[in-house]
Image 1 (tube, rainbow, N blue to C red):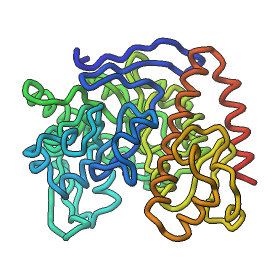
Image 2: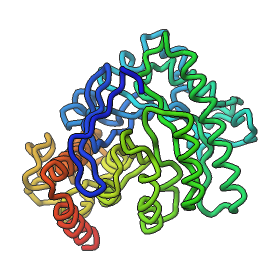
Image 3: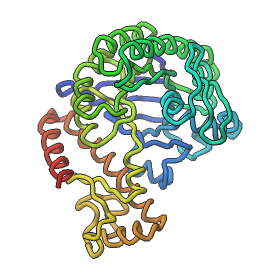
Length: 378
């Protein structure tokens, strides 16, 4: 493990862990939720607002940034931290998910993925080497290996092929990372476990990644349509296949109840566009489930979005005002709703950290899930 990246576990409660990741740009309290800053911005919120909500780290997207404004341009402008005004750690994904899901995909070969840009149709090759190069040009704090993602409904043969290729790409990603380590800003590189929902495939993937050696390990290939029940069954075994002394990151998750369930199964890090995307469409997350501020029932409601929430939206504005802003498509509505959701997620993570440290996670998770799910159904 790099001396610039240290993971310390302070307490455990069942399979859950309370920890700290120490990096050059600051400490990350785990379990941690990373707001997504796809195109060098957490949408609708200034960096200081993201920090005020409690976030220690954000996520940037390799695919989007390499296409616009371009990794080389960001590097010339001083790196992603300076470019977007965020001085805390940044994790960048590898771009693998986006080239599979957003692009007009041409071909997957052992070399990499050839694809057409969703912006202008230009052709690109994203390989393990190029993915790491782009992440280094951006100045990422945590770099992700390049991997091949497949959905759980593809044939078993394809699942095995993709898992095997991801292992080979993991080795190439690690080698490329090591070649540039002396002159790069990156602190760490994470490997990504694949294998869809198959326990044996995930064990094979995990063993190979451990043999290569990474600073942290992600559980990839979930939250892609398999449903919560199947995802949780996979999380019953997948995190335990990864090293106990390294951070475990569940990519692209998620919903508040997904996060709570995953923390109880040993996951330390999360990211998802849900709190920001939902905020922009008028949905607020609360302890009593999601709330749609567009509903007419809120038109004259003088209560805050959530009683007791200290966020700027709840401290100052009523549901009635937010209802008006969102229905009128005022930009301020999207900003305030998004800010509330970021605060909700970070307060949720702090609650989980406190519960682990005090040895009461099982009761805390049970109460949170019962209340949240009851409100979601209401």
